Image (cartoon, rainbow, N blue to C red; front, side, top):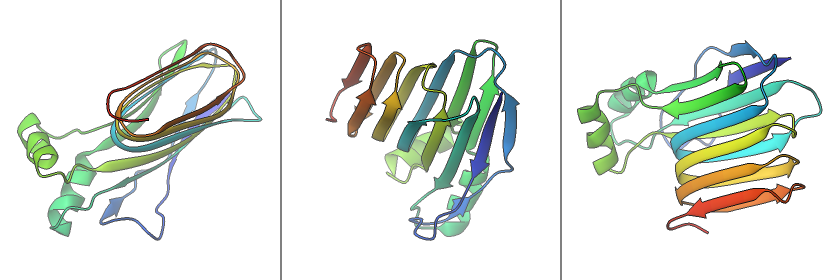
Length: 167
């Protein structure tokens, strides 16, 4: 069982986009999928295999493409197997001061995550801004989002979705 992280660049990215080298992580006994990020979108679909696959794109609409690219190079998308949980984190590696400048300027980097995983894994997603979509899931789903649309197709009755300004 493997978790695979791949970054791809679509032709219509808003501004500079940066990719990272693909990562492969053994799933082993992981029964939980934990996803956390700040801005962008997350789509989780049921896999027909025991592998976890993650496609991620980091991009920014910053006005200065050199500064945007440098910041995106510091921004990390990581998938880690920590025993019973596979954690996928899309978070900045930059200093707090630099991150605050980006957020205040409304040019925070975005990450588009497309995750495919066994639908029997419990799923927790914490996403600040952007849309979250979960399809064909059979295990418990817990989603917290500050702003964005949440769409869930869940075969389990165990669903919790919380949003402050989204729908």
